[in-house]
Amino acid sequence: MMRIRMVTVMVVVVGFLTTSAAAKLHKVGDEQGWNPNVNYTQWSADKEFYVGEWLIFNFDKRYYTALEVNKTSFDSCNDKVFITNITRGGRDVFELKEARPYYFLSSGGYCYHGMKLALVVQEQPPLAPAQAPALNASPNSLTSCAKISILSLIVVSFALMTNFSW
Image (cartoon, rainbow, N blue to C red):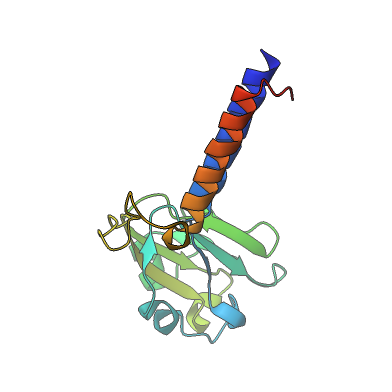
């Protein structure tokens, strides 16, 4: 019974690792971080954002905040009515959970100095046939997620076949 429980835990952990490995983390503002006088419209212009990806806001929490707001508040730099206060420690992450426009700004008047970000999140595109591994693909052509999944299945199979005790 203990062996089955451990195998189940291992499969769940490996499954989590393979799905989370595909999620992208976007560092807002790249090396400039979340600060005044950064053009976040320009920063986001060449990027695509998908459901399940993450934003990380790096900033000095003594001065700045990261707030999710609606479009009206974004347009007017209104920090009084916000959807979510992302601010925790100045290195704060936010998951893009659904396909829709998202709006962020900093309070304290910093929105007027450029600390505002609008982006549109899309559904994950389906894998094109060229991106999906073929059934007869060589091991070198498989993605790292596929390699991890195959390796985990081999380990679990070995453990079950040899009555390996955890």
